[in-house]
Length: 231
Ligand code: CA
Image (cartoon, rainbow, N blue to C red; front, top):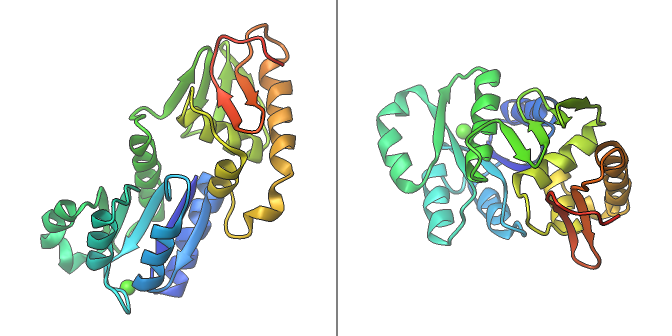
């Protein structure tokens, strides 16, 4: 998952980014003003950011205007607004502008992370924290994986690749899309490692079973779906 944090207070932005990276395993880009935030939000490829965390009081372009322009331009990423306590009366206005949720400052980082994860799940059409494909279960709160009821130990990066695929079962996900959603900027230099994670996932999830879940479409990408014997 790839998240954009638009927040002009450097320490707060760094805390949020660290929480999202360490606690949730997301890739995080940050923008310190509204113009840069809007630029990044609109230039993200492959469906845009999986979530945008948006402060309201921002230099150059305020958060409300950023949100209005993003939605006007067709940007569909879920948006979690950080509002100051005295801005609470404008929550209805924010929701009308296309915000999906908000937390009031000062907020508990744990609450922000929980709301961020819930928004990402809902944005992908999965209100439940457990993603299921065939006999595979991905538990996004504990970040654990079971196949046929048995726990499968994955490395953090293998888990992140699998969670992304599990949010879109049956869809072809290109290597570029995976890279963009798993890494911060400079993802190009990681392009060779995706195969390593995929082969690790195959070994742990698919090898012991006749029914294969992870499929490669040559030149196109990867698909997670049950009902296949493809190597
Ligand atoms: Ca601010």
